[in-house]
Amino acid sequence: MSDAIPLAPMPLAARAPGKCILFGEHSVVHGGPELLLAIDLYLQVGMSGAPEFQLAGDAAAARAHPYLNEARRMYWDEAYGGVEVEPVSRIPRAAGLGSSAAFCAAVVCGLSAARGGVERSLLAERSFAVERAAQGVGSPGDTSAVVGGGYVAINAGAGAILWELTDGERSWRVRRVVDPGWLWLVAYSGVPRSTAEAVRSVNRRLQAPDGAELLAKFAEVATLGIEAVAAERREQIGPLLDENHRLLREVGVSHPRIETLIDAIRPIAEGAKVTGAGAGGSIVALLRPGHEVDALRRTRAVGGRGYIVRASPNGARLVTSGR
Ligand code: PMV
Image 1 (cartoon, rainbow, N blue to C red):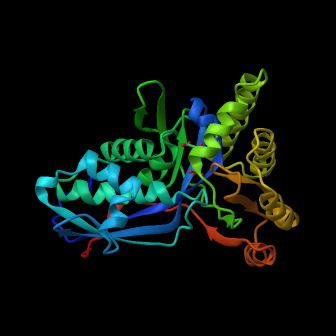
Image 2 (image 1 turned 135 degrees about the vertical axis):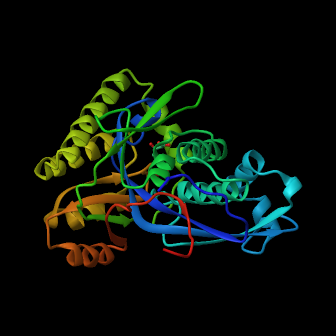
C-alpha cells in the first residue's frame, strides 16, 4: 500500500496524532539531534465545502486562526470556495504535546487530499511550512513526528531517511527509529505556554559565552538517547532523560509546576523531563513497569493531567471507511 495521501472529495475527515519529545528540544532549532514519537492521542478535523472558511461554524474564528490562515493561503485556492473545518481533539492545547502540529498536519492533509492527494514527504514539508509561518520560529521536528508516526530522529541515527527539510538557512534530516514498544507517561502541568516565546528566550540564553558548550551537551545526550532507543537499551534511558532535563532547566525552561510533577513521580520513574518548549507545558517520564495507574494518581494529586501513551503507528491520514 502506498503511504501517500490519496485524492478524496469533500466532505472528508483527516486525523493526526500528537507528539512528545524525548531528547533534544530547543537544540534542534539550532540543528542539533532530536528524538520524538507520535503519541496515540489524536486530533481530527472534519472538512466540507462551504461558501467561506469557517472554524466550528464560525467565520471570524477561522479568520483569526493563524495556522488555518497559513494553510489556506499556502495550500488552497479560493477559486474552490471555502471550507468548513470541524476540529475535535484529545491533545491538550499549548501543552507541548503537538496540538498545533497535529492541527497543521490534519488540515493540510485534508486540503491536499481534496486537491488531488500528496506524497507523505511533501505533506511533512507543507505541514512544517504552515507551522513555521504561523509561529515565526522553530524546527520541523513536531510536524515530522505527527506526519511520520512512530519514532523519528532528527539529524542523527542510522535509520532510513524519511525526508529532509529546510527553512532556507538550516536543514534537518528526518529518520525512522524502530518503536521499542515502551509505554510513557506524559503529564500536562496545567500551565499553558507559547512555543515561540520559549524558543526566543532560549535563543537569547544561548547567546551567552557558554551557549556553544550547552548545545554540545544537548547534542551528546540526544545522540546517546537515540542510540539507546534504537538498540532497545531501556536501562540507559532514565538517566539520559534526567540529564536532558538538567540542561533544559539550565536554559530556563522548567517551571515550579513542572518540578512538582517530576518530584511527584520520581519514586516510580526511571527518568523524567520537560517535553516540548517548556516554561510550563508537560513532562514525559519512563515509568518503572507496572506503575502506570499509580503515575496517573500521583499526577492528579499535584494538579496535573496524565496520559499513558505509546507510539502511534500511523502519522496524519484520512479517516476512511472500508478494509
Ligand atoms: O511546541 P512544543 O512545545 O512541542 O516545542 C517544540 C520543540 C522546540 O524544539 C522547543 C521548538 C521546535 O520547533 O523544535
